[in-house]
Length: 296
Image (cartoon, rainbow, N blue to C red):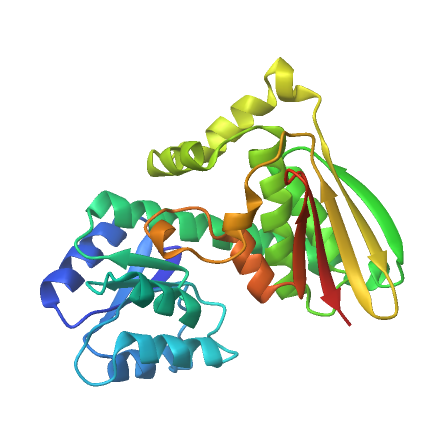
């Protein structure tokens, strides 16, 4: 059985045909809709379990942006990632799509390889999120009494485990797990291992990101590095303080989604964590220390 169920919504039959054929080779089962009303009906079928929606913005009748807002306003559907595709490429139009909740915004025309890269990035994100949330479910009862903790982590596997443990202490473990995983991963890949934004983008386009991360973990200059995260609970808030051993990065431009990076398969994790998982995300100095809070 295919692993992923994808809904593709576009009023152009040729686009539906192209995307369907691309995704069949990615272990996907694809359903299509030619308008937003048909897509909404499919999303609300009792048996619907879509992993991803690929959505055209400009369609007759209700456009894709309105459908995206409906999806994100529905608690049953809000966690489904949406890739929005559109010929509307003005910065303010891209920003509007991202603000409405699009996980990625693909401007037409795009190459098949670009679409596949972004789809794979979405699936990787879903798998990581599911692993972290599964870890959280194991610990939620035993960890709810903790008021302070400090954990060390160094690898991708560590990130999943530590994010699962920490999110179990939160009032909404599912939401917290996604944001914690993003910030912890950032401390390893961009902090300790020194993978730059452009390097990660190229690695993701070549489907080599995880293998390069694991390769660098074995190099002498990185092998002994670890990051730490402290957890503090008060009557008013939960605070997570993450520190890595890297040289930092220009964190200020990643706090909000940037339309100019909309076509990149990376670069939105911090902004998404800040928007959906935490009340505040604040970096210090060069960027190798970040504090995230959840208000109780």
